[in-house]
Length: 112
Image (cartoon, one colour):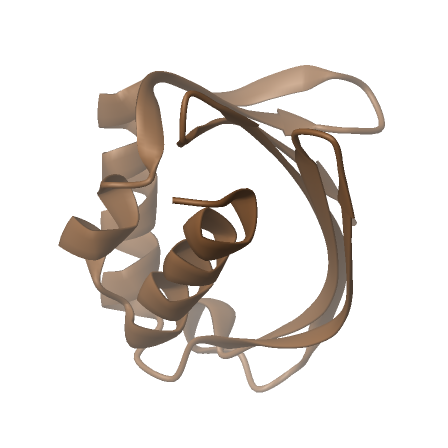
């Protein structure tokens, strides 16, 4: 799979709230990090699964609207609006930096 296909699969799984499909694109050591202070928010596959499972359960209308995407080496930078997070009707703007290694997402950095 190309880096574009990996991220597209992740984004489709996110919009469909499909935890099984979502987890196929993450490696076992996945880390989700707050970009501004480099704080680790999620450390490992099981924490990631639990976080997305709860998010999907609490967000029946969850979806992302992609504003812009940049691919640079093994990174994909996505500027997006998120709607329906935890039942909210407000849109949330964020930038996500996906890092891919061996055809799996190994790190996600979030800028909000």
